[in-house]
Amino acid sequence: MGDIVTVPEKYGLGPIEVTAITGGEVEMVAPLTGSGYSVSGCSGGGGVYSKGSGSVGLSCGEGPAATINDAMSLKVVEIRDAGAVLRIEPAG
Image (cartoon, rainbow, N blue to C red; front, side, top):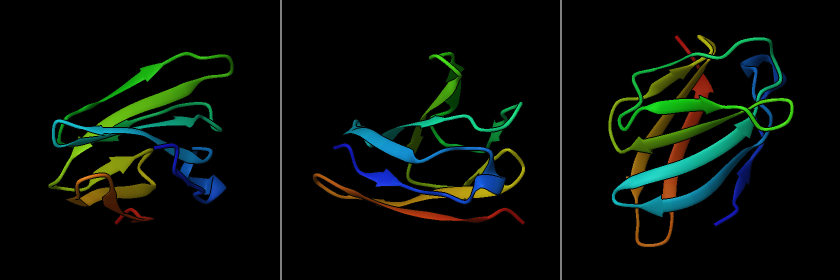
């Protein structure tokens, strides 16, 4: 794993790192660059944990797109044996 996806600063996250693909879900972690964090609609849920200046951990399965910080849409399009296809675009 360890694949990193850089996203625009306006999304409130630093680079998103895929840390694992297990049990039909993609696990990711990203540093927070803004003052808050929100996630909705992620199959598998999402969680926030503090690590230094703050990071977020997400676990998402194939399905509906998650909306992150009301600014970014993240969808797990397909999970393959050792990889996944993610679609990241502006929310809305």
